[in-house]
Length: 154
Length: 214
Image (cartoon, rainbow over all chains, first blue to last red):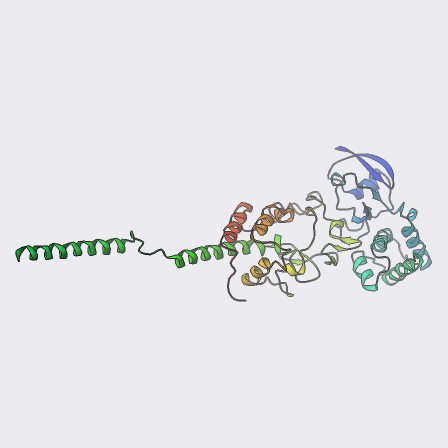
């Protein structure tokens, strides 16, 4: 076990965990922040996506020992960001969600896409969101919502 | 008259002794009658080409060639299958927004989750592809020409290539690839890193020769 000082959503958090513990388990089990979802556990589905120093990151495969002092942003705080707010509004407006399980990861990825590419083409969207799986197949509405958020952010 | 005869005999005997001695030494190879620059150059070229083949055996091993693809995606595993999770190359070989290489690959191997890591994890540029579009390794001659083409290799000359093989973190990673999440260890290239560097040095010192052919 070891103690780690984390910056989660702008707040200082201290956890005492095994160094090999992936960030996802730290968030959900230690910090009780359950908005970030466990999907596959092997970085194949994107449900666990958070932002690590601004980079969309699969939290299920990054051990806490490798985080360093990089700030972590999760779905719980992404709405405080202008791009995050626009994406969440578009998600509601387009009624994207069906079961909803993958959607926190989808939103975190969509925000990362729009921050890097404010006016994405459909190809940009397909490539960047291609690693986020949705078993309800809401992909068409996800694309519409990203385009809508992009328009709102003009 | 007798004196002249003796002188002639002595002269002939001397000639005979010189000829026999010269012949014997030549046969034994003890006398380098004339320096053979062509043979020396040929030997150096042959040694350089042999060293290159050793280098090539490493470059085309899975730990190296999996990120030197000709396609828009990397490979993984000893069977060099397409990287899972729809990972794609992206404009700079670092993935795309929301699906960067560093979305998973950190600065070092994450052994508890089985994800390999190294500094600045990324794909080699397409100019350094060592496979064809069917994922088959290119020939030794073709890879050699690409590796030595400074318009394709980020401007590296021979010493630059040697330094790259000695120090580049992602090259070094090939000999410290960590293990998979199931605990099995990833395979290593066919040479040790020291052997790889030594082979590269011999190849560079020979003038980075490339095999002929396609």
